[in-house]
Amino acid sequence: MATTVAAMKGKLGSTEYFVLAMKAKLLAEKGIIPSEMEDWPNMSLEEREQRALNLTRVKNQIAPYLMRDKDRFFGAIILAGKNLKPEDFEPLGKIATEGLPRLYQTQTDLMGFLTLQDGVVLIPLDGQHRLKALQLAIEGRDKDGKKIGGHLPPNLSLANEDITVMLIPYDAKKARKIFTKVNRYAKPTTTGQNLVMDDDDIIAILSRMVADDINIIGGRLVKYTSNTLNDKEGNYFTTLATIAECNVAIWDANFPGKLNRTEPLEDRNTRTLFEEKVRDTWGFLVENIDLFADALVDKEPSGDNKRTEIRENFLLGKPVPQVCLVKAFVRLTSGKMTARQAAAKLNAVAWNKNAKLWDRVLMSGGKILHKNKGLATDLLCYMAGEPLDKAREKKLLDAYRIAHGDAKKQLPDRLK
Image (cartoon, rainbow, N blue to C red; front, side, top):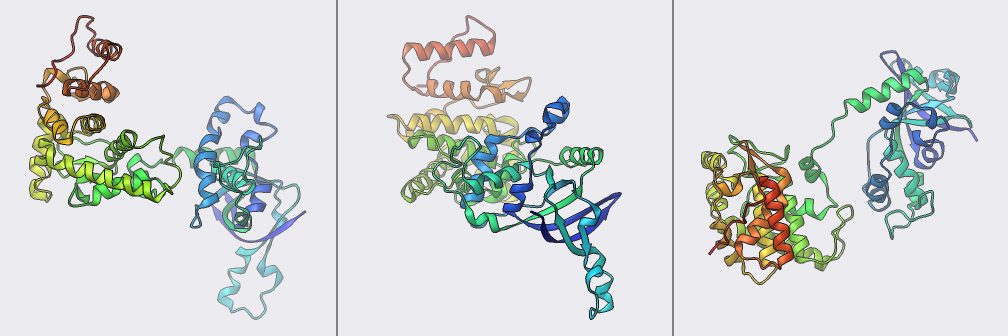
């Protein structure tokens, strides 16, 4: 059945296009994901790779967002309309201009009505994940009949809501070119930027709390545009991504079960307890880990030189070692060790960059080794007195020897 929608006509370069608000149900019915097209098997490997759909992301993140969030919103989807004909658009000026002021009459050729005939198929050039999410959110199930988002019911009201669409008449060569350009130059947001914007993820929410609280770190000292810090960035203490990774460790050490970060943490009691644990842990660390306290004693620009000095000389001025320390701390204190005992042990570690302890573990050629965070955390816990059975100690020793490329290397002494 043909459907008529209000539309505005535009042109950019050689491409004419239409902008319209389409009901989600209509878009879901007429839209088709490239991998579901009949000619998908005949596409080149390059084309299929570019248009591959991340269904896990759709089912676990985007569709649940559309199903549960009353403030849901996203930008325009760019579609190519297969079988869309020029005569399917009827400008308002062709219908009626009588009585309209002359200034308005000049615009009526760009405003009008677009009829989507039965045979029109809409192929996403940008937004296939959002299109698939709309289809699944309205149905509430995937093609195999499995529920989306676990307990979430289908969002029937979504079907009648408006989705902004930019629609281009289909031309195979031009569609491919537009798809390639739009997606090639799209720049994904950083981990830190995602943490700034996410209002569902409790880790993101509490990481912003830690960052912004002047009694803990204070906003200006936390970098969110990148996950790394260079030695000269004394205006920063850490990164938002670092805080978030540490907060995950705090959850894992104190709460049962894996945290689902794609949905809000609805249990108020658990949410409150987690917030208190995060606040207490960070509040204790910034006061009782000596290098943290030194870096934060003056949070104003007048303290930037001190932070620069610490980062140039000590590993705890860098994000990766910070993560290792916090993970070790929460692991130690989840056992029989008190917070003060754990802090005393961790303060006794040689944190200077040229310490032999960290060669090939956290440092190599003057650069931080990201891949050995687990090994470094295990070493810190071992040195601080974490009890290990023979099997775990052997596993740690083997990993330590592999890192050094030395089959005779022995574990460092435990701290007294």
